[in-house]
Amino acid sequence: MAITELLIKSTLSLCIDPNTDKDFVNGKSIKNINISGNDVSLDVVLGYPAKSQLENIQQQIHDALSALEGIGKITINVGSRIVSHSVQRGVNLLPNVKNVIAVASGKGGVGKSTTSVNLALALAAEGATVGLLDADIYGPSQPQMLGISGRPESMDGKSMEPMLAHGIQAMSIGFLVDTDTPMVWRGPMVTGALEQLLRDTKWRDLDYLVIDLPPGTGDIQLTLAQKIPVTGAIIVTTPQDIALLDARKGLKMFEKVGIPILGIVENMSTHICSKCGHEEHIFGAGGGEVMSKDYNVDLLGSLPLDISIRMQTDSGKPSVIAEPESKIASVYKEIARKAASKIAMASLDHSAKFPSIVIQNT
Image (cartoon, rainbow, N blue to C red):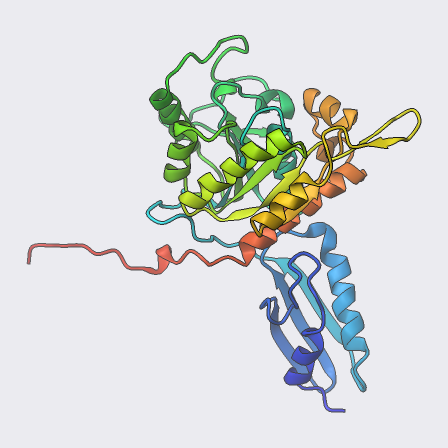
């Protein structure tokens, strides 16, 4: 059998990307097919970070090609290339930031900040360059969750260098004020402070900036959603009805300003007793799944009510760092890959390709 490019593509069109649920050919991941006799070489370029999955994807494609009659040597290079994607209309991208992921909840106490920090660390563990902005001006928690203290430096007196922890860049109002200082500010001051934190930080070539938004859906959140260039949003909830009511409001808020919903994360979905192993749905069951079906969005993952998650974030080493091989860390990494792959399938940002128009007197 003659090995042709058409045969290669038809074979690989049956191979499904485990993170996008699309085949690699229609997903446009197969590049640079080269055939020399019966020897084949090609590149698999993913649009999202998936360091932990590269070997499995390489093996999957190798196995599919190996089944072809007469196939010779097979060379497969698998990697990721993360590019900028479009944001809501009328908002410009940030310098040195390709994509912005907003993590939001309709109410407090559902584990939004814990999800944000573990999502950022999971994206970094999968191979991306990641930043984390703590947008909760009234109750900043990321400095403690990341185990960072001190003040950010300024090299030029105008901008701030991001703080570094566990391989990610971070910024929070908590780095600029004392721990016990309350932020007794009105809405416009909070919005202004957040915009300064966002735009006056010298982010360094980020693939993703994760923004831990304050809880709620009021004027502050709506203003931020209109001014910050967001590629996609993640809604965090717990299974109980009262949390889901508020989570639905948060989802509708992003829809109103034209920000795509990447999916829903359900926290505290179940509790397993550390003594006897009994499983109990303390906050109800299946709420996140029902909400995802109602709004036709993905349920990115469900996390248990587990004391280790709380202890690890309180100690400054969130689950993805404290126990990178644990089941909980693997769930966070799966959430990160799913969210990033949703972004990869979205429309690209083409603003850099348009020429600047300059009016001159001649």
